[in-house]
Length: 154
Length: 370
Image (cartoon, rainbow over all chains, first blue to last red; front, side, top):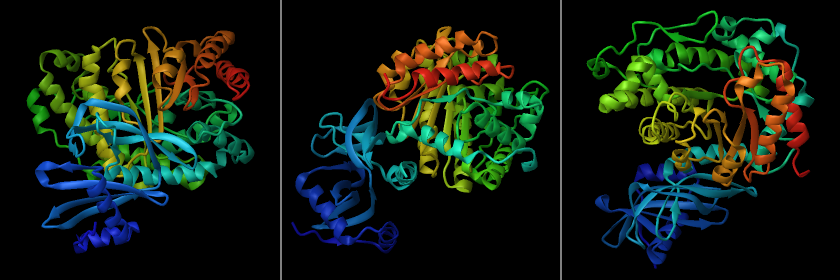
């Protein structure tokens, strides 16, 4: 699948600040579109896909428009995602799992880094259990957590 | 200030740091850590007053740091009081000779209309509050003088209790039954203010460990549904807002008082990679370590308790035995265990009882020997 992406200037800046390449983004969107491992905000026509590339997991938030994909943001975390330790069905989000058509719910997901497994806040599909990390958690909470784990391990 | 205190023994500190980190990095060190939540006890045991402790944050953080070294406790220091951030919402707080800051009458919320009029301070405004200024004094001093013991912490102790202090606790508890919408309106404003306070600390220091308590919101005062509605849900909103603003990633939940009926509510809490859950009591007994391990041990670090009341009595073996039993029940909790007291160790705590806690951790909390 050949993916054509439109990257607005402000998003280009975000990618550059976060060290995320256009190729990374293309790979994530291709994976989301082919494997259907993506979630969506139906009212906004926005999709969030993720893929582990090398040692990091990359996310792309995009909208398909006439065979092209407009990128809204992209982010990544170094911690490797494992299974959810809690899925809280009562706390639904606006996100919908594209495979199961179920509302994503709040969860805590095990993450592994430097051989250490600890949980982090995520959102998960109550049916297939696929989990995603939201941008603010990846960009702030996990970044600091990764750096603290590096220091503590040292 | 620094002239009062000899330098930290860095050999002790290096060892205490490894011990402190061990539950979070999965590398066992010498023994389970002990945190008796030392506050003004540090002042009185070292020759100062309770009022000194609460009005001189620079001195207070040094006293806690020194006591931590004296008792072989934590490699970091702290300073706090329970009525945080509410001065930014109009409460007049005053220190007393024997207590931390208390709310003076008249309380800022006299009528339901007062809640509507209440202005929620933004991050800049809350940074100028008395509470923020006291914390900044404490943290700036630590950062400058004993940076190896520095952790910026934002406290919310407890959001329900903070709202209650603005109204008057009895009146507020009655409102939860008769006028719950009013309570929610106030809880939202208190939560937002506390979150802005935490973000102010994170903005200044780069991150902010979040220490939260469900203290007045416990099983004696509220039903489990009430704890969820008036405490749990607001604490989760608080965490989300603070995380979005750059605070965290550490979370320390301190459920003080009796949580015998509402503890299952807390099974749905938000967890970050550095999360500790501490539950004080099950009815009038320390919350059982085996129950904590079973229900929470697979997902976060647990802190088990010794009855705070015992810390005053000159019966050291009773503290030692209770600590031993809690450690035997919870020491192999998969994501780590800390030994503490159910709440702040009382001001007149007998030092022999802190030694009893540490002795129990040395005797029964050494990893890999059970």
